[in-house]
Structures are given as structure tokens and as C-alpha cells.
Image (cartoon, one colour):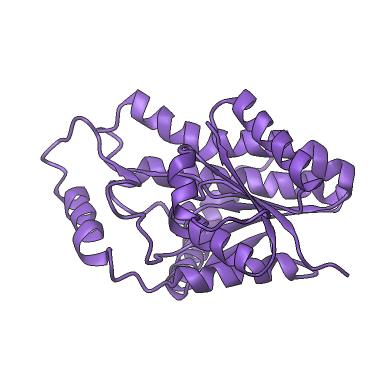
Length: 279
């Protein structure tokens, strides 16, 4: 059986996406990779490789996404794995972030991924096979990060629609998994992947301190190795019965456990109030 697959990866010019694409190509897989800037993508993947298809895509544009998917099918004949990885972090408290800034973050992190799903599913459905991986964040499991509320909200949305997607596409032999990465040593915490609100309110000291900690203390000291994350994602795809949810990184595993324990405790504590509403 041929174990080499065709991957379609968004947000491939940097970070975890870039690391994964390089690893996939090195192991003989075929990759259609998207970026907002094809020159940046081609520069990042410098090797000449007939198994690599770089694509400049505006994920917010359905026409752009549809064209990219069509080119991928034309070149490779199929899609085995679709990974929604593109995204950025909008920093700022909920009071500070404007309506436009909020919507722009949702456009990229949520609606861009939905466009990819909408345009790739017809092929996966026809194939009766495929795997969709949606990259969320540990911030999609817990939103208790001051100054990261909108970003976390986008990732909570990714979790929600992945659960629905998994239920919808199972009958077609298609798997769907949402991945919650913790802190990995990529360039995500640098300025290129983070945006700050145009209007900041100085009274929000806790949010500013957490933002500074991410930029100065956490950045460069993240525990996660992106190379090992790439391997883990490839192992995920190879599983016979893959999970719907996968936390990635020892830090994410710990945060997830604490969140679930706290949630269970809180639900149990208020059981009487919760169950007081039946006829």
C-alpha cells in the first residue's frame, strides 16, 4: 500500500506550517502549500521539487481558495490531508479591540478555514477518504489569558466547527481532528504573527504584563520543538482511529488537564442550581 500522501497545508511560509512542509517533502510526500506571499513561500522552500506546489492564496476569497484547490487536484490528482494552519494572534482586551480588528481576526482564523473546508470537501467526499486537520491552540480550550480574548474566541470557534465537521463527514470516510498546540519555538510570538490594537487603554495592566511576558520571556524559551510537532502530525494521520481532539505539547497537556478538572469541579459544585430548571 502506498503510504505517500498528498497534503494541502495553509499558512506554510513560516512557523509550524513551514516545518511540516519541509518534513513532508523530505519524506517523499506531495504538498500543495499556501501563503499570502508566494515569493516568501518559495524562498522558504528553496529546493526544486516536483512534489511541491506553492500557491499564493487569499483565504478570505472563495474564488482564490477554489482556484488553489483546483490547481492542487490538477497537479496531484487527489487530496489526502487538508490542514488549516493559517492564522495570527490579535492581542488586546475586549474593550480595546475594535469591531474591524475583531472581524479581521475571525476572517483569517475562522472563515478562511471554512472556505478551505467548503472547497475541498467535494473532492474528499467523492474519494470517500481524507483527513482534515484544523489547528486551533490551547487557547481554544481555555480563554483565561488576559488580552488574548478575541484570538481565543477564534480558536474556540475552530474547535466547535471541527466537532460538527467530524460528525458530518464520518459517513464519507473522512476524518477530522482539531489540534491544540501549546507553546512551540516558532516565530509566532514575534511581530509578524501578532497584532496589537490601534487604541490601547493604559489601565489594563494585567493584559499588558502578559503581553510583555509572551514577547520577552516566553518567546525563544517555548518548550515545544516544531520538528517533533511535525512528526506527531504525520503520526496522527497514520492512525487507524484518530482522535477528534489532540493536545500537542507537554505544556498543552498540563493546561488541558487543569482546565478539565476545574470545569468538572465547577459544574459539580453548582449541580443543584443547574438541575433546578426542569418541569
